[in-house]
Image 1 (spheres, helix red, strand yellow):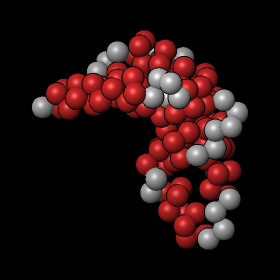
Image 2 (cartoon, helix red, strand yellow):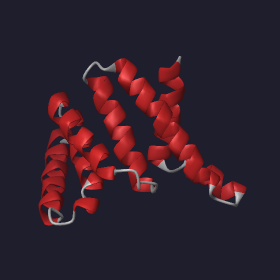
Image 3 (cartoon, rainbow, N blue to C red):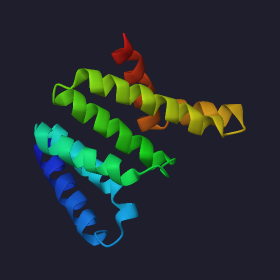
Image 4 (cartoon, rainbow, N blue to C red):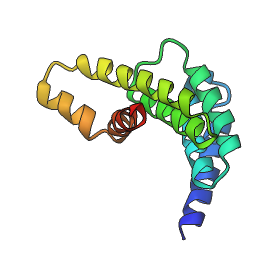
Length: 133
């Protein structure tokens, strides 16, 4: 059942990429989602290529929540492909970005929610801690 779910998710992510092909600024998020599907399906090499492309397409302007997912996915794809040192460096940088973005939230309780309950933020911070040791 789970394999079918990943196949469905992969198909939908590919459709999103096709629909957004003319708008490059919108491609990083669905590219990261597709890369996550590929990772879950054991296709690490394909996932890394796609995740790398997504990070490259983010450019320097990336600062939103979707960017956290793109960066997290790239770090996980690096690690899945055996590039542990690169993955560690990248996830530490991604965690710093997550903290900086959360720092812009004036309300401390909302900031805590952003860091602890937004899945990609919490996972980025968790992996940065785990991989740094």
